[in-house]
Image: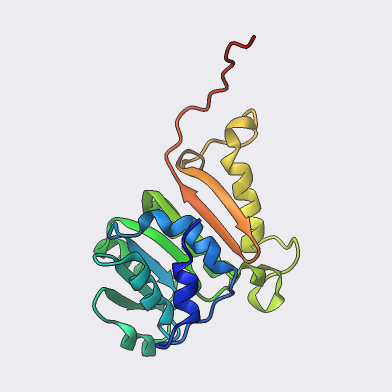
Length: 217
């Protein structure tokens, strides 16, 4: 667990506006702490008021690069030193390609974009496998998966939450006795953490799974 730096930044924020659920900050620090001071590249989808981009810049420290993606051209004004803004839709392959052309190693992706189901899934499928092998892909506000206005609904196929449930099976594909194929996702994912309104995918190359027995008394 982190030291509460992000939470304090948020509560004392006097600059550009930030809109976040309070319980997100513990989640952020749990999964992002190890990148502090290591010049990571962070991509946040959804810029809005620009405040969270500044928060990430402050949190990760000198040398980090924060890339914001938003469909609203007005968001370009939030660009500054160490913060770049790309204008376009998160489900546009050309926009995503721009990211990886400029930053071949992306350490963290935060999807706080449209929250439209098709967009969330399309973005994940375009970006996840290109995040660095020990990186993090975090999707927030997943409560929208249950709201019809975003294309959601309880246990409705095609929502990002149902997509995540299928990914849980894919993570365990090696144990399904060939009912599911072992995929690149299986081989490159350490775990999936599901929280209230947040899903986090932690990448880590997986070797052969082995169960051992040691000598007892």
